[in-house]
Length: 206
Ligand code: PGA
Image (cartoon, rainbow, N blue to C red; front, side):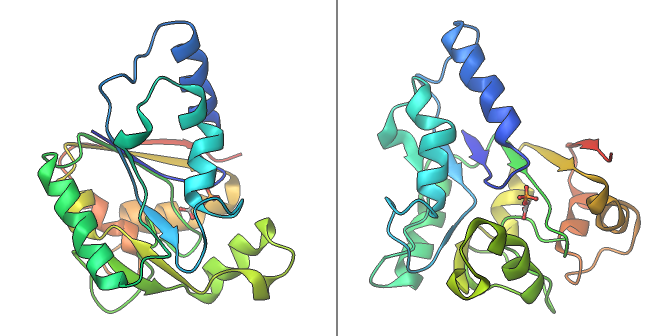
C-alpha cells in the first residue's frame, strides 16, 4: 500500500516509475494507493483536482487498477463522512507501507497546515495564506484556489511503515532545517517526522 503525494516535487519520481513500469521493472498490479489530499469543491475530472493530477502523472500510464487508487472526494455531500470513510479505508487495507511526502514552505505535510495541535484523523482543513499563494501558480488567480481541502491526518502518516520525504529547491532549505532540527511543534507540522522510526529524506537544495 503506497501513500502518494501531489505537487511539483514528486513529478520526477512518477516519471521514473512510469518508465520503469513500461520497462517491466516495476509492477503495480497488486498495488493499492492512497493519496494524501484533495481540494474541497472540485470535481475529480477538473484539471486542478489532485485526482486528475494523479491520473495524468501516474495512474493512466502504469498497470495499477484504477479501483485500487484512492483520493479523497472533495465533492462529497458530507465531508465528515468522507473523512471517516477515508480513514476506514486506510485501516481496512492495513495502513500505509511507504508514504511519499513533499513539504510546503510553511512546513505542511499533506495539507496538515501549521496550527495549535497535530490533527490525527483525516479532516477538512482551511488552507493558510502561504499555501494559497504557493498553489496559485497553478490557477489563473489566487481567488480561484480552493480555500479548503481534505487531508489525511498525522496518524496515518506516522503509522506508515516507511516515510520518504522529498524536498526540492533552495527555497525549501529554511523550512527543512526547522522540520528536521527544530523543536517538534504543530507550528511546523513536518517536525513530527523527527519521531518517525523510519524516515528517509531526499533533498536537492539547489
Ligand atoms: P510542491 O508542494 O512539491 O509543489 O512544492 C509540496 C507541498 O506543498 O507539500
